[in-house]
Amino acid sequence: MKSIENMTNVDKAKLLHKLFPNEIPGLLTFINDTCQIFKEQEQEISESWDHPVFTFAFWRHKSKSIEQAILQFGDRLASESELFSIHLFEGYRAFFSVDCTVKYAERKSKNPKFKQAVDLLFNFT
Image (cartoon, rainbow, N blue to C red; front, side):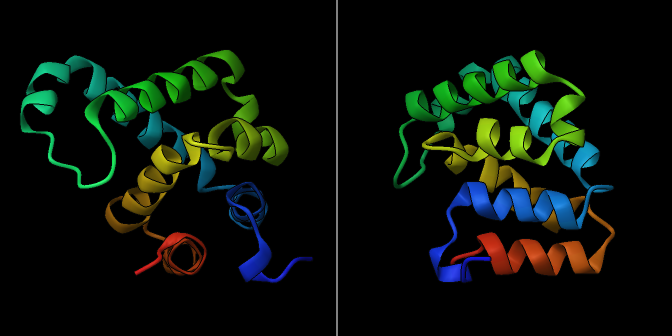
């Protein structure tokens, strides 16, 4: 196993999936719901967008890309760590997926160990 410093987002997501398989369906629902909210409230979100790094267009594109992966692979994302990690956490999609994962852990998950794992793997503050 790689050291945490040498793990990619794909590696981290795959590990998270393997350690907490019961959390993944809820996380996928949260990510999908976030994509839907982004699509349904696109105008309002674009008008108030103030992210210091990512443009609204970039974030919208990542949201659509993630939504498409969820539609394409469905329940397989919950059961297959490789599929989950590659299609949601590879490349620029990782920005959106990591953001959703951190928010899910903070706001929705009841599992303190999952929250700690997400903090260890994905929080950079």
